[in-house]
Image 1: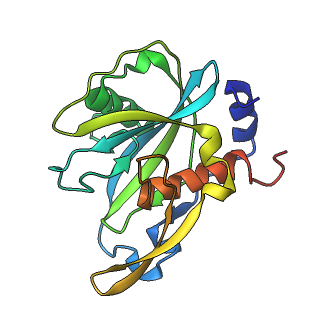
Image 2 (image 1 turned 30 degrees about the vertical axis):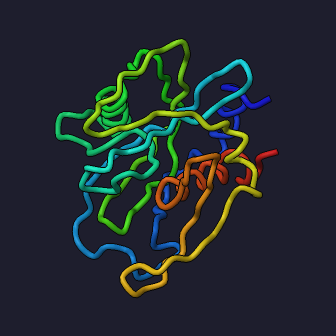
Length: 203
């Protein structure tokens, strides 16, 4: 059964320092040359009776970066944040009203570099219901859940191509019902799959 114990056992296999991955893995020319902006997101695994689900948001269409896209809650790491985990928890509460008192940080995924110049620390947290959400209407139009089992099924991992400014870009996508999950979010979900299911020594 996929539960907190199951997740923790698999995270024990990934104690080595995180490596860097990102959009440039599939598109070598997309790695930004300049300084990167540090950010952190919460990969929230909600403990439901029927099994774990992943917490995701839909960004508003008015945001400067990645408007309208599906993402994890999170944002910039500020100078007064103790670390990336603190930033992810703070941003999650600011964006969707989910208090850190409902979240137990249990690990992290590899650092993810986006072509838009962000260095993202994906923080894995177990989320304990019941809780109520209060969305920031400037940043988030919707928060929703997807069963973790969906993302851990390789049949749902799609590698696609799209023309971007005259250049062919390769990316991952994991469409779920009406939600088109792609780009950096899908890339981090691939890393979650690799960590929980496909890592050496995991069985």
